[in-house]
Amino acid sequence: MKKVLVFFLALLLLAGAAACGGSGGRAGEPVAPIIQPLPSPAPTPTHDPNVPLPVSDEQLFGTVGEIAWRVDRDTETLTISGTGAIPDFIDEYAPWLWLGLRSPISYGDEPSLYNRLVIEEGITEIGARAFRGLYLTSLSLPDSLQTIGELAFQNIDVSFLEIPKNVTVIEETAFFWNWQDAFYVDENNPNFCAIDGVLFDKDVSTLIAYPTQRDGNIYEIPATVKHIAAYAFIAWDICTPLSGIVLPEGLVSMGDGAFARGYAFFKTTLPKSLRTIGAYAFEDLWMHDLILPEGIEELPDRVFAYADLKRIVLPGSLKMMHNEAFYGCYKLEQVYFLGNPPALAENAPLLCNEKVILYYPSSLSSVWAPNGETEWNGCKIEPYDVLPEIPEIWERFGDREEYW
Image (cartoon, rainbow, N blue to C red; front, top):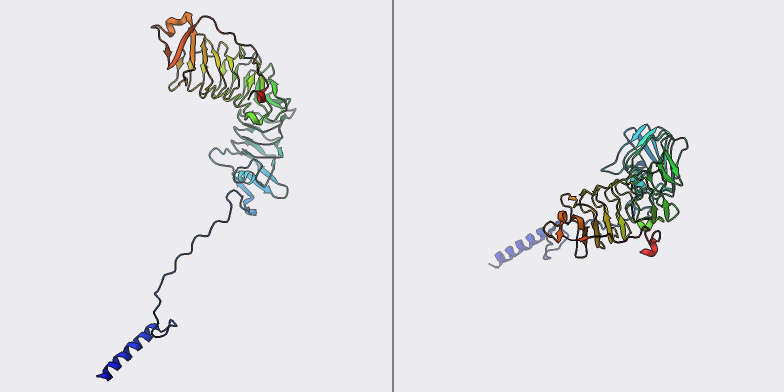
């Protein structure tokens, strides 16, 4: 019986030894469980997303249709060559922009690979937004250039820009929100000219663009000008020396956003010749009083958005007020109508509050308040017999810094 028991114990010891064989273990030691290795954790990012990644040489050139582009690291120059038009870039960035703007958009504060732009002979058109936002020390345009598209040089920062002799078309917003000291035009160009650094058509009837970094806090628009192009003067009020503008009698129209972002006019009454005002034209206007002339028939969308107005006189010719014409005019207190109630476009609230009172001529009481109404479009209304005296000259003209 003892021999049988010893035999079975021996078998158990042999089985244990076999189970440990190949693992380096010894008989009687616990067997380590088999564990599947865990996947390696993702490496901790070491690159600051605000610092541009290195750029390889293969990323410094390319083509877009018939257009070739190349960035030279040594001379810090972007060169565009080929024939025909540089295309529009409405919903995307041009492939060369990121090398000039880098990431994030820096306006010159982050390193870029070029600060000079050379567009060679053969290029006839610059498409929309092709060179928006670049910070440049120099810019060269070819004599072959004929068209500069809308927003082509949007927000570009360059001291001066010369329009070549064969340019025939400059879209109104080509230099939207520019950061230039001056415009120049080849003297042989039959379509455009520059006067004191300001860009006009040849007969000086349209002011196309004002260089926002031009010296001087007051600018008198030439008497020949009849139209102000869209966004011709747009600039952040704190980023331009200009604060006051003298408008000429004879001015007929102004485009969208023509004087947006913080200016004042010499006279509180706009020119009697004025007939058309674009949307956002007087955004951020820093005047307390303004008189619109007879002949104005419509107030477009947000024409006085965020203006500093306290009192305004609207002409008897006014027939239509569009969406939120006085949006954000929180200081507005008195609106004087000289004629009948205008039609209101759909969703065109006047943003009236308890301070705002609309005044109408007592002679038109039967139209404004046939049943003795005291409100119109949610605003208080009252008749008046005589308009209050409004100073002809804006009392704080030209002193924006002191004003603010």
